[in-house]
Length: 493
Ligand SMILES: [Zn+2]
Image (cartoon, rainbow, N blue to C red; front, top):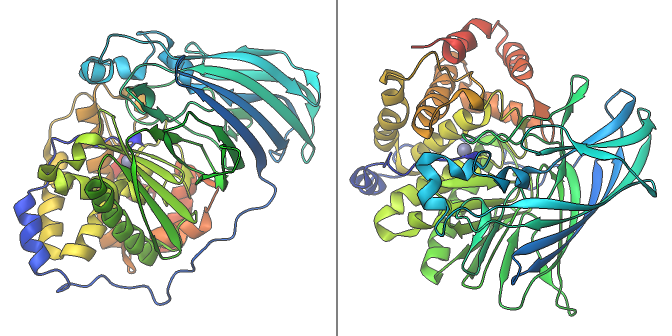
């Protein structure tokens, strides 16, 4: 998850002894390397929405003042009379709509009882004029902004100001003590596809977030003593403000803590920044993420951003990915959970390629990033620890889910709002989604990795629907991939 869901529940532990034994023979089975080394950086697309964000965190009120200036160019091919911003924080306003208020996560998240989170909007100004706006879905996570007709190719500036009331909640959104997880707090432009803006509600299972890439510059005013990590890596200026930027990002997330120790290392041209409660934890997570960046760069081509931050965070699941940043659950850092930390770090790192670089429909086709990232995590294990560890992990994470009884007619091709709980979601979307990738690995002469590398290049910083995936796969394979996808994605076993 976070999912993007990249929620990986910790109960599915990988036998640590198998890992330890495998380490001894690591290197015996080498990963098939691509013919040419990956370039250090990819070329960013031009003409994306430019967004200047200024944030001011108030530690007493637990609020984040947000000021955003979007320079938006209509490249939809349609004439637009409105824009849509995603205001995900509003889902936290009530127990009925909060994704953290699920029975299975309530106690872990609301450590001091229910605490609401919501946005208060102050200014919505389009081209210097106040604009009409209204929420257009039940949980108020889609804000429609009326604009005069904006033809294809035309541009305009939207100024948006709001204050986010943060919930006391140990979730990807919220604060606890002097730590803040600001995932899906900063409003972003929604994704426009097939003649309309996406406005789905915040489904509690999975990562329902779908948005287009934009170039962000960030200025953060934070209280003294808090160390921020951000999708856009930040440097502190002489005036005390933190500033940074990230290009072609689908979202912008931050974590802040008064207890963070930072460790960093550059691999394959990517500066990995690790933030944790202890030097030991920061170094350990740094090592895992660096290995994963190396592995996936070799397999799937250059990473999408020149920096990647990994943050120890109070979340009720294994981890959560954002562009240029991942949250890893606090408990993963226990020595006894070293295997879980490594696997979660690998899975979340894979999301930098499959979610952040190649956007897909996390609401209607969550398998398309989760199944691929589970497969990529398996590939990481094979590259690092050999065939034996791969087989052990595959049995637990893919073969077992293929044999489980799951409720109703759930399939990997189901949208997130079909799933009643995380167990079913994990088995079906992660496990059976990864089974599709293993099938592709057997079916394609170049294996699944060759396809995924081409897929990453084809859709870099763009969006691949399931239809796009199928069409590209069929073209790549030289035959109709439809029956195979139907079998794995839409057939209840
Ligand atoms: Zn994931």
